[in-house]
Length: 316
Length: 231
Image 1: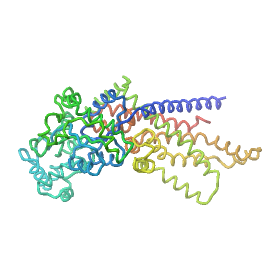
Image 2: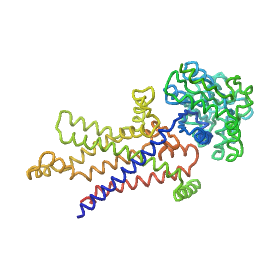
Image 3: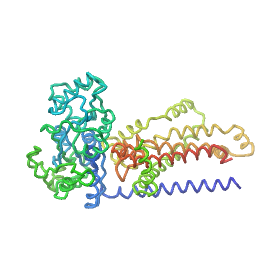
Image 4: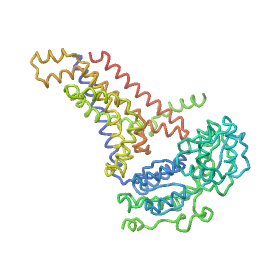
């Protein structure tokens, strides 16, 4: 008797599990039937949750599933080059131009900007306050090599846009990046997104290069303060590039265009201009609208909607 | 200390309030892990049986390889499946990268070795006298195999539950193949990694408590199954 009871109950358990699986599979399948837009984004737009909000609005507008994966600009571009994304949102002008020149990207649209800042412990153990960015980096290195216990620099180390800018700053300071990154334990490579890198820098009481938006979003959890923040060289521009259907014919080029046009629409730019005011008491990003000259984007790159036939032209 | 205490309180509040995001992520985690486990069971139980009931050259080596793959690192499986499923990879045209389906493939590969190995071990645990007496009582070869499988069912169910536990708690495949897409491939483990990096500790802790609770239940089940539950 006992055996039969246990047999029946275990059968019931297995059936229940199968039903859950089937129901869930159905659940998962239904969004798959909807049209899908795959965005490969840099971490700052993601960690600040700006994209979460834009995604929700866009999904309702076009009845589409937006699937966002985040990683540094290098990874974001790499994913698109492998054909695993329809649209990239990145911030590294050198690699953006290369991406387009090599035929992967259609066109470059600037939609937002902020600034890079160098943040560090409040007592500023390396004494960089008041310097320009590359002087400050050099000073951090010298202090770090002298007192590696007290002064550390945490690098993204993940091939991101911020990492690229960091390399440019070392270069401007007259230093060779490979030598800097292997010159001692003061130089820490996090290998993570901006948010996690900030938290790590905070734990280590080090310095790091960060964008103002991510810093504002994480400020509440940090003891770090900005030390260098007014340098024209620290401008940081966010750009959207749809992946060309000429390279991957099955990319959702039209929907990528729609998303770019949503980003630069009045509503999209208003949302960028206001985002964060409720939660952080200040807007996190500056919209590109009206600031094209300041951020050095050319006329056809700046906050202009893309024409509808760009996709069909590219695939023709 | 304060952070942990307040985090814990908020986490329990989130669970008790049946926060929709928490429920959604938990349900997705369970669905993907259950699907992987069911598929892996259908593949590995017959495979384990095939290996156990047949004598062939290299059987010992095969069992050794399977046992080595028990500790297959999740990120290695992630990398392998990523290369297969990426648009420019051999199975790219299936469009499975960054989908729950892709995660199921990865998790199935991940847990298949341990489930195969434990199935073989379970069948080996049945003494030869069971087979002998079945045959002496007039059972055919197939009937004898079924008798042995019946005897080994507790240990085999434990193998399945262990596979499920590993699928549920792994993060490498889920992150690399799923991509942690909100509302689509975000599961308990990847959500915990993300929310911790975003600084939302309470949410992470709530998910962590759920994950530990499920693991605990699975473990209790394994223990009961291996104990006298089936005796």
